[in-house]
Image 1: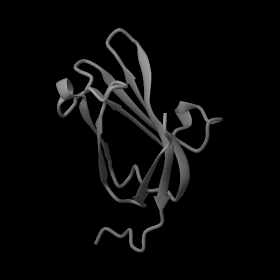
Image 2: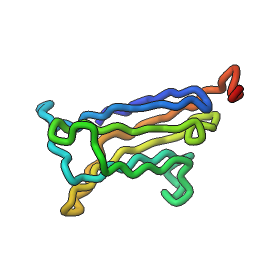
Image 3: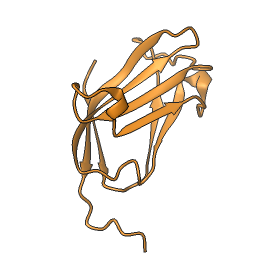
Image 4: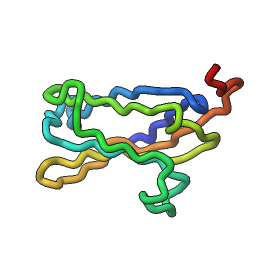
Length: 114
């Protein structure tokens, strides 16, 4: 599994579209599945201490393996480098790690609202 790097500016909203495929590149039907997105400081931190925890149960196109992870400006109000993981959990409680990597929150010139 290749390590992925995600970058987002501090306090920006961001939507990541994820397409879940098998090793041959064929989309996996994720109807009824749960996608877990977790961002934390390091592997030593428990998931309870994660800075972002998203549970996605409604998918944009589940039969084509497509879902979205939506981050709000409150989610991304961090600066620094963290780790993230995306896990698929089926209705039969089979867990599969989809992507792991580094998430970089870059300092923005402006984070004001008005």
